[in-house]
Image 1 (cartoon, rainbow, N blue to C red):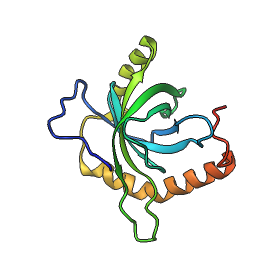
Image 2: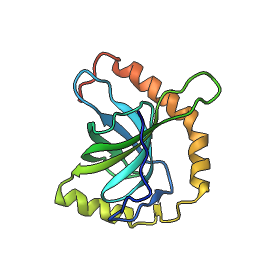
Image 3: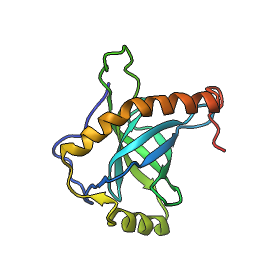
Image 4: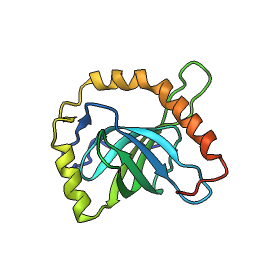
Amino acid sequence: MATAPTPSEKRICARVRPRSLVSLAIYQGYNIPPAYGIVTDISQNGARIESDRILAKGQNVQLRIQFAEESPFEAGGRVRWTRPRASNGDGRTGGGFSGIALESVSPHDTQRLKCLLGSQDFDLNLDRQFDDFLEALRPQLRKLGDALAMRCGRGNGRRG
């Protein structure tokens, strides 16, 4: 059963939205192909993502987040909530949204993330304009996820 965050949740750090595409790979364990997605908003403590797969609440994951023109940011995390994507009219419903708490981040990477999120590449305004931008990217996200899964081979989920 999918769950969404409750209104009573208290956030320690402000969420920001990327002004450009921030992609990520989600490693769920050996023999599970990585999932791929995009970051819809992020803070120092967690991220809301849209992925080509539905993640399980409570699941531990390893993230490799690719910010524009930066080296990848890697962190461990735990899935706090999930929401499957509604059918898009073509009969496919794969993937969905997830909230992931960042849990295994080194002090150096925590400072690096803080600097990145405070840059001009991120916006505190969480308005609908970005949602419209993401809506336009969803078909490409599905194609990218399918292509990468084919390239990696569905049976080989090892990170490498």
